[in-house]
Length: 631
Image: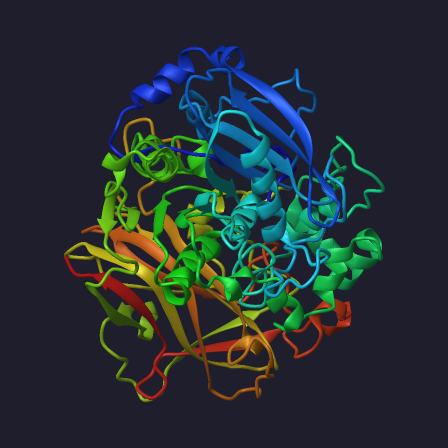
């Protein structure tokens, strides 16, 4: 889910690769004169007919050079093809699109069904119809097929080869394009793709509702559109600059619905009436259908993507498993959501990664990928490896023949007495750490005051949280050798709670040495910095099944085990590994009333305190399973 001010950057069509690299000659040339694109392209706008008679608005930018034929690159978007008018060019000289223009691609943007100037009815993450029987059986895959079919027949100077790419929601449309089956579609790049809105992206993580992002997004996308329009929907006026205060004052999700959503915001009301992972959510999950995928695939994502990190990793893994014959590749860098298209990737918040990171990606991954499949540049055949992953901490790109890598040893690290984190199991016969989770005073996800969710929280300093009594902390001794983690993290907690439900947020943290500095001009005290490497929530009632939630038996030891999204990070010698555990992460995640009930429709009186015990003894040992790369 994206803020409207950044949504237009979801137009992804990209190209560049490694980290310690200066700006590529191609990028430098484009930067010199952005008017080159206007002088060398003309624009064509068409309403392209779909098989059911609905027409989709499409902007087509075509090279004036007709001495050669050119590949077509498409981005299908719910965020507008603006500006409208064949004499009006959009601001295409941003990092992710200008290279395609300079390389003389035919660049296409299309308003998806029911958005902006396209006809029809919009549906969020429209379900895929596997067996289409009539022309009325339409989905995003069929719309992509029909759009491609029209373009290869009607767009002048095209070479018959088509690619599709997009970031975030357009990443979802890219994944759906891969299922279209059109023979002209040779290569697809879903980037930070929306994938599963219950398990890991945007709307929920492990069944816990990501309230702050979803509320604003649904409010904008859910506003009725009586006819095609070039106008943006109005955003929500919070009348506040403090999101923690705003959402806490609402009391409950039910109040939020009654006060601001009513019955008119369709998808919000569908979400709150489908609290479990039922057929509604499964129908809206594209990964179930990623079988026999024909075009080559390049998945791109950010290690610190606050919205669709899970989608990038798991779209790749699902294709590997369900469609093993597909030419499938992945690239993950140290970016925020869509950061490769919007920034140089040199830092996120206070944490620095080095120069030339996004340039490296475009020069060595995306452009070689599309140039090979769409332009037939045979010399690029083996240039893009299976997995190109930036390892933070050591701040270097690494190439792997598969992901997770083969040479990974999964090793548990145990919570132990006195807040220690050790490779050996606890020896005490009885041991636990207790904290009181109070929904009236939830743990904030960041220490700053702001209204929009920050992208920087994914690497934020966690010292503010470590100082709270409702956050428990475990850490290793100072590391004598570096340790690199490559793959998913498994949290395996033995817990008891005094109520019938609770959330469990586990955070993997890199603790910098007390004397650490990047340089003399550090604006933030980096000595002792507690860098969030990965944090994830598990709504406790879904610990055994997302389809059939289960209440906890109060004061009974229970296992809560769940997977956290992959990491690619080196804990350097002299650093420490820290684990923080808490039961609220507000207002990023809605508050759990800590009773087994329908959270979307409960009352303020239903919110109660819970005494949480995290066990670390010889019989009930809590641990975090680390994927350690053997070098």
